[in-house]
Image (cartoon, rainbow, N blue to C red; front, side, top):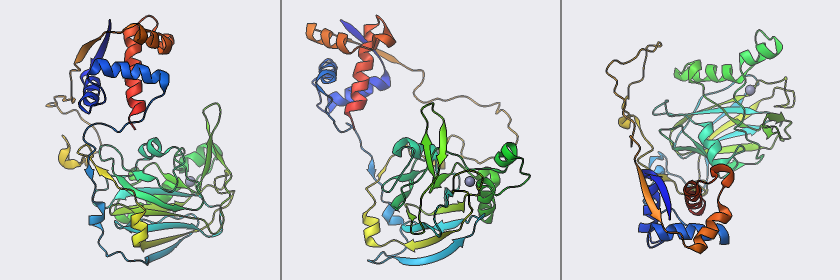
Length: 363
Ligand SMILES: [Zn+2]
């Protein structure tokens, strides 16, 4: 007899599988998990509510046609950035002029600047080098796709490195003042009333990076040509802020500061058709869902004497589910149990196998 000690959330997951008909009961589901650890894990769809379709195309303010329509063009000179409104359904193209120039990018919701691109979320979903077909996501608790990487001729985007800053160049090299992405972002965003503190982690276009064996990260040379560009399609009205990286000390832009060309276009039908269907979930929260929806204006922090904590689904409740293991199931458990982690605790090893199986088998 084994006993699975499950939090109510873990039990909910297994119960949902049973309700979806994956197994007759939790016991049978455990047997299935053990068997598939041995024979190969079969992919399944997540049982339960998949969310609704996000009707982002309803927010497009123009009537798309078979042709793109160019609305705005700008040459981003070396050492500068620009805050540009990109409406839902429009494309921002960031194009090389001479080649080998890195660009940093910030993205804010035009309707609420507190919804901003989150490089961490983007990295988690698409890896450290997002390419065409990937999305740029906003931070929790919003977590919406803000832009879609429609085309990318270089495939050289980075989510590892933060923006370079004035202090980086001073502390490393003694520059009293040096072109840097943080200050360029701040100066460009100032046109819309944002402060230097509002500059967030950048999505880095045309930036070659790698993770070394010891876990450290390095910037490598880039080989982009004058023909290379990245096209980002807006899935909501956004303020996009690209700047030409100010780094002429590292390999980032191959030791030069060069211009980039910006273009905003109304997308054509084919562009819009290339965006995969998006889902909408109640957990993509807006200020209407916040327990504290008011943005502070005073800068120092003071404790709210009336504060009473309210953490969802607490206190944590656990359930003990007894599972009868026959000789075959016991043999499977013995074969796959992580004794290095759990020692003689077979119940914990079984829970690891069952939940690990659940996550691996449900795409
Ligand atoms: Zn930079």
